Amino acid sequence: MGAFIDFFRGPWHIAVYTYREGIRKKTLIGFLILSLLVIFGASFISSYLDPTSETDIDLKLIKDICVATISIFGVLITIFISASVVPGEIENKVIYTILSKPVRRIQYLLGKFLGAQLIIIVNLVLMGFLFCAALYMRQQVFPSLLLWSLLLTYFEFLIISAFTFAVSCASTSAVVPTIIGLFIYITGNLTEFLKDVQNRAGQSGKWFDDMIGWVANALYQMLPNLQNFSLKTQIINGQPNDPPTDVLIPNLMAYGTLYAIFGFLLAWVIFWRKEV
Amino acid sequence: MSIAIQTSKLTKVYEGSFRAQDVHALKELDLIINQGEIYGYLGPNGSGKTTTIKMMLGLLFPTSGTIEILGNPNVGSASVKRNIGYLPEGAYYPDFLKGEEILEYYGKLYGLGGKDLRHRMAETLELVGMTHARKRLLRGYSKGMRQRIGLAQALISDPAILILDEPTTGLDPIARKEIRDILANLRDKGKTLLISSHELLEVELICDRVGILFEGVLQAQGTLDELLVQRDVTVDVDDLDDATAAKLAERGLQVEDRVGTRAKLRVASAITAYEALELCRAFNLKLIGVAPRRETLEELFVRVVGAAQSTRRQ
Ligand SMILES: Nc1ncnc2c1ncn2[C@@H]1O[C@H](COP(=O)(O)OP(=O)(O)O)[C@@H](O)[C@H]1O
Ligand SMILES: [Mg+2]
Image 1 (cartoon, protein in one colour):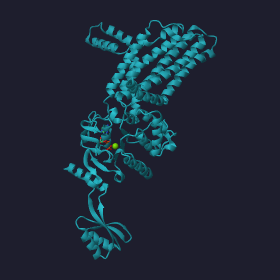
Image 2 (tube, rainbow over the protein chains, first blue to last red):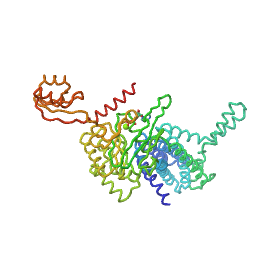
Image 3 (cartoon, protein in one colour):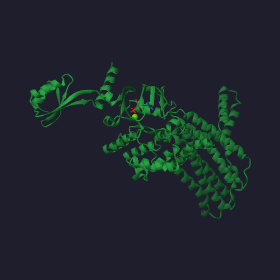
Image 4 (cartoon, rainbow over the protein chains, first blue to last red):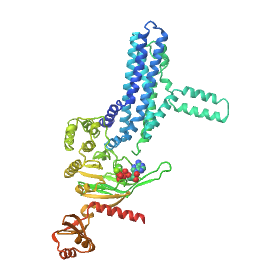
């Protein structure tokens, strides 16, 4: 037990440092302020402008905007921070002073990854809190469904974060990992479409179509299905305090964690003999 | 005397990516750094000093050959790094932190904490003369202050071995002298110091042993007494005029540091000291003194590197 705690001590200090450094980044602060403005604007201002039109459509629209905002800005922050915590430190050479301390490389990576998660979670909580408050003031019911949705959204971000982080360990700048992160996010949300591509391509029997079908299937099998993590339809159409339907939350959390562990191990394999 | 750091046949090739040429940065390097000494690791820019040091810390990996630190070949492991304090080349530290916060962070990575850590922080800040600026953000530090904080973070765990990559490059003379004094002081406390530098005068002032690296090959290694040969003799004279100076030069006595009628005559190896004195008498010069002259590190350096360059050309 003592050894176990000792192993996590270094990573914890690195994580706290990474968090403190990360929340100062101007890009991140910019994303956060923008997203809060959008949520605030959509949910509060609209009611002031036209207090009589408390229609269903109006509320749906607001929810739609807010869910989309949290998802898009949240994923931008996730990708941005996961792509830059390690390359940023290689670039400013602070990494020399850290890796020369009695810290193992896996501890270093763990610290950086945990620090990125802290930043992602704090951002998600800030955005989620504002949305919850807005919904509560509108409808006077506790928006528990939204909390479930935020939890699942975090696990979706965790997957994207882990793979972006792995790619960032192979590169010296944050540009390539950012692009790959966006790719994972977009394709991860389009896996149903990939399945569709495979089904259609399989029908003609031409070798070229077969190949496309094969690639689509490979991507479908490999990529995490990020659509699973979204409660958007239910949030928009249902009551804010409905229990989540059609999803198995523990399974999704396990699914996200497994993908994240795999991504982190990939990062370690890439990094453990990397020359800095 | 036991050995602190030893490399044997240490070789490093940076593989060129995409049609770029491979760089043979180090070739079969055999270094020995004894415990309790200041070792001056010398070489012009690009000779491979930083490469060697980074391999000692596990930041780079040798292409072949081995490194042992305090008898442990497992360099880069936490147990070896625990004994080392490292000051990287250039001053890059997280500049959103205050001076003392940086020491706190690095101290924690060594596993220090609580009262121990606070005590060490105060001690090292005092040692490097940064107590007054400990609450200021690093962003506002001058280059010299950054270098001092860098030294402090290397010292925070009171390590047995200090590896300093160009610790005084870019500093003003007073700061250099102060840092030199701190380093000599650490040696006197029994620490082992490996200092890489291309500032030869400075190294000569504090180092016990030196190694001279050129193009990845160790050209010479030893104590300054072993390496610096007593090359010649100088004769201090007075009552010298221009005509005499010219005549002396023809006979093999080079006039140096002439101030008015006083001058130093450097005796070339072609003539003996006796012959030199005979000449002085013949020209009616007033003799002030005769002294042996040791080669300077700079001359040694030029000699060694020059020899290496000429063998390479052949
Ligand atoms: N990452 C690298 N990739 C390729 N070549 C490198 C790299 N780092 C250093 N070199 C080359 O290795 C040689 C030694 O460099 P270095 O160890 O930095 O020398 P020094 O510290 O003595 O100035 C130089 O020729 C340098 O250009
Ligand atoms: Mg160097």
